[in-house]
Length: 78
Image 1 (tube, helix red, strand yellow):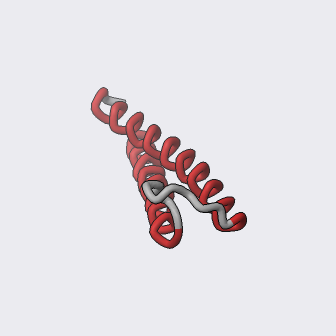
Image 2 (tube, rainbow, N blue to C red; image 1 turned 90 degrees about the vertical axis):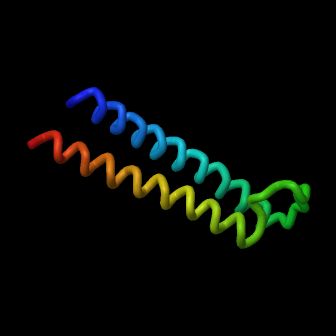
C-alpha cells in the first residue's frame, strides 16, 4: 500500500471510529434526556429533532467512511 493510500485508509478508519463513538455517546445522552425530560441548557445543540438529525448525520458519515475504507482495501488486494 502506498503512503498516500495508507494515510487515506488511516484517516477513513479514524473518522469511522470517532464518528461511531461520538454518535453512540450523543444518542445515549439524547435518549436519556428524552426519557427523563431533563431540561438542558439552551446552548446544548443535541436536543429534540435537530439533535436526532445531527446524530443520524454522524452515523451516516461514519458509514460512508467505512464503505470507502472497505472499497480501498479491496482495491489494494488486487
